[in-house]
Image (tube, rainbow, N blue to C red; front, side):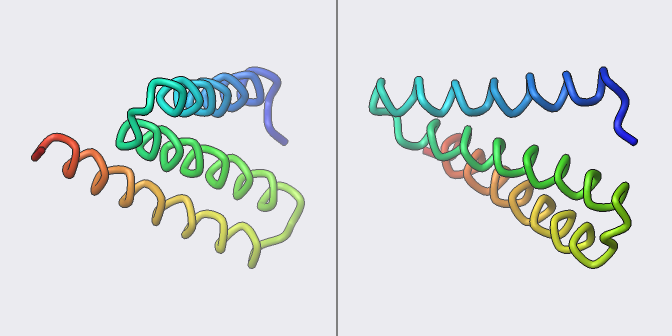
Length: 85
């Protein structure tokens, strides 16, 4: 079972990424907004995979873990696109 501090950390990470995405959307910086959203999806899918695994949903946990890895790779790609100009 996820410990209380793990839930708090997951909430802070997801909320931080969500709020930064919203901030960049308002500022009309779409590249940074997309980066924030891919990071948010990475976090949400990662923590969801842990929850599924704890509940015994092995297939769903694996799917979410793979989706988390995909979004992590996409976050790196978006970051590289932003840095390269």
